[in-house]
Amino acid sequence: MFPPGSQTAAVRAGQDGRHPWAGDGAQGPGAPGHVAPGAARTTEGTYVNRQSGRGRPVTAAVCAVAAWGALAALPGQAWAAADPSGYVFAPDAVTVTGEEANADAAFLTADKVYRSSIGPGQKLYYRVTLDAGSDAYVSAVAVPRDPAGKVAYGDGITVSIRDDNDVRCGSESANFGAGEFARPITAYGFRENDPDGSSCQRAGTYDVLVERDSKETSSQEIWDLELRHAVEPALKSPGSMPTGAPEDFPSESPAPLPTSAPRGERAGGSGYFDATGLETGEWKDSVAPGRTRFFRVPVDWGQQLWATAEISNDNSSDAYVGSALVLSADNPALGHVDSAALSYSGRPATAALSPLPPVDHANRNSSATRVSAMRYAGWYYLSVGLSPAVAEAYGDDPIRITLKVRVENAAEESPYQGGAGIFGVDDDDREMARNGQSAADAGRDGTLMIVGVAGIGVGTVLVLGLGAWTLLARRAAGAVAVPDRGRTEPRLSEPYGGRPPGR
Image (cartoon, rainbow, N blue to C red; front, side):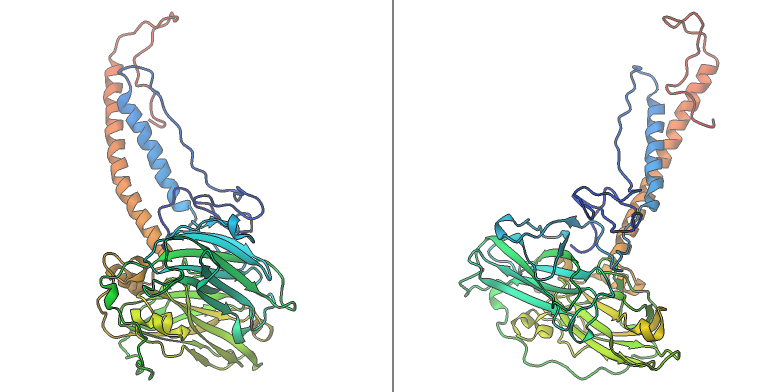
């Protein structure tokens, strides 16, 4: 669901200084149907050959040239670009408007990404259609438009799924916490299958409510929202799953990474869409004040994730900045798992996530968020945000950071029947983590492969088409004049459309 699907058109991002938009039904800021100046448009035309029995080989060549031109244009298409907030939204996100009346709410479809917005104190509705047996999730990434905007400890969002009697099926809240600086935060609402439950179990329409809490002393600007709807696969043996949470799990920090562990530079992404893949190792990057870097780690069933973020020294000052850096972890459906903050005074410092349990379906039965969120395998997201207050004492230049990531234990068998989608890890995911690839990179690689294969086919058509034209041209060289109605001068038989340019 989160990797981009095939895109029939792409908008060159950032050309109007605002938001990049692409995908089915996407609209830009301001008015419906907005398209950034310079946006690439797809047009279709039909070439009709009215000369019966003539020129067909050349028509193939013309089509081949057109196809080649279309392929040649692909590398110039933009996949995603940073919003003025610094966040990269999924380029195929569909714009929807949250409604204050649930009856007017727009429906969200599973495996699609949506973009919306919310004002301070607003309570906005969306809708989903659920079956009677699946666990379902709707996440909302809240993105303040001004990274320097003022936020308070409790400012944030709550996302819930509700039945037609307004009974809350499941909810989660996310706020800026001790960091108290504007950055992307995420939470999800959920509906869990409970054979013994009396509410939220039927098939039908459910409301999704997104609520924003902002103090009057905080910035009152609009926040953008990135919405996703995911449905968990069916279990192989639903009746045999544990109904209680694991009582304990390894909580002692693992041994330091061995010297043989992978180490190197890994530039983080600017959103969940382009989060950079990581495997166990030590990874260096830089983050500027007011910005957040995104990474992702594949964590399979039975595996345990450990992560720390270290900030490097800066000798230009020793000024103290409280909660200068925040390290956050989010699960594959973009439910929040845990976060840790550190203060900064120009000396090296480290923020470490609390011990997290191994991935287990039974974790969902826990009342502790950081345990409950580790309920399925897939890509787990790590983000590192640096407070804009750091710039006041240390300047606007990025500061070096080091992410130390460790995934413990051998992978266990999936409890699902059939494919797991985003709720699983396969060899391709592990390879992407080794290579530092994002979902955006995977989309690019897939398209370039298609272009390469198509290029071979187009080249073949070009050779055949031009060969046919050459044959006709040679015949034309020795042809006799052919009378033409309405003309007194003779003309030679030529391939339809004339000679190719430059020939």
